[in-house]
Length: 265
Image (cartoon, rainbow, N blue to C red; front, side, top):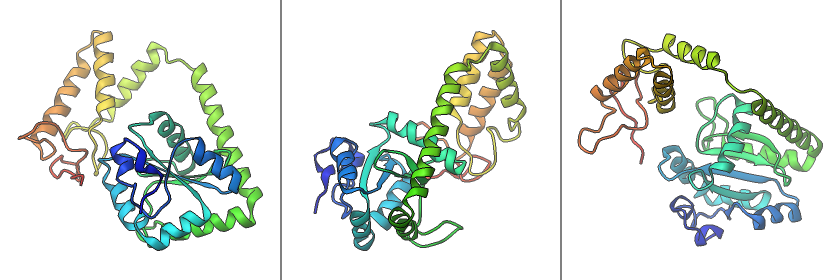
């Protein structure tokens, strides 16, 4: 059994080419099918090294019963975020706007006009850890599309308008040097000088934060932030996060001490 991903070149998409879910790649064929059949779109975005992407695939996308319901009620599109960062960026904003956080696998339900009306990340096959079951979400959204279409479309329009407003505001608001100084100062004040990094467990290496502070330090000829960067890298390298054989760091630490790395399958 194969689906429409079989002719793709992305390793991530090819991993799903034999799912019973009738996956489509992002493209005109899938979008036209959603409009012609008047079906909502289930958009799943992930990448090859994403642990929870593989977990959800095994639990739900390889399940015959779940796949049949998805095929009957939705047009299902699978996207590799490393191949299409543009699509990932757009719908990640929607996920964050609707849920307050983001991540992968990204799970977004769209109208045929590509308006997001429900979103999340990983959903388990049964209700657990205060997360709804994926089957219950599918059933509830399919029922809403059939019996409460106006409310679904209203939500999609509201989310779309919100995202457009954000884009317009971002294009107008340029960061002045004093804004960058304030950001750097705030990052410094919230830095964990005991164990390095920011936040509690699970603890992620904040590569973009360190890069920002590095550029800001060089531009301002201020080595104050270089001490922070050095401290952060030193504390990470002394823990279990660092691969002493092959080099590099694990994706994140499951504790706040950088001792227990999270291993991707």
